[in-house]
Image 1 (spheres, rainbow, N blue to C red):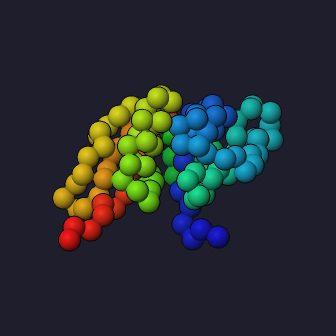
Image 2: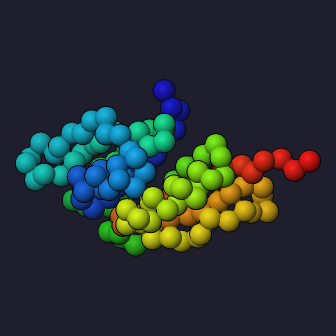
Length: 139
């Protein structure tokens, strides 16, 4: 079991699940709809590149701590997802796939001073995804 699991709040979770399948090859492991029939998803479980990601629809009417809102719902984004890949070329491939699926390229793939191939995309739901792979050691 993964110790820490990111839990994303999005506007239109059903659409986001389909998007994450296309952009990141996500596998859907299950979803639970809101019991009152409003067609919102209270909980969904995805696997993205081997790691667990949970997500849910916005529930702003749940007043505790301001309700559950997506970054698009309140304009804030305090957390970014990091997808670690084994090979630098996989960063480029993941970037192209995500952008082709509808993500916005925030930072094109490049080799960094911290010895990694790195890129960043923003999904249509307001979340940032960092793509990272360690570069081979220089001899």
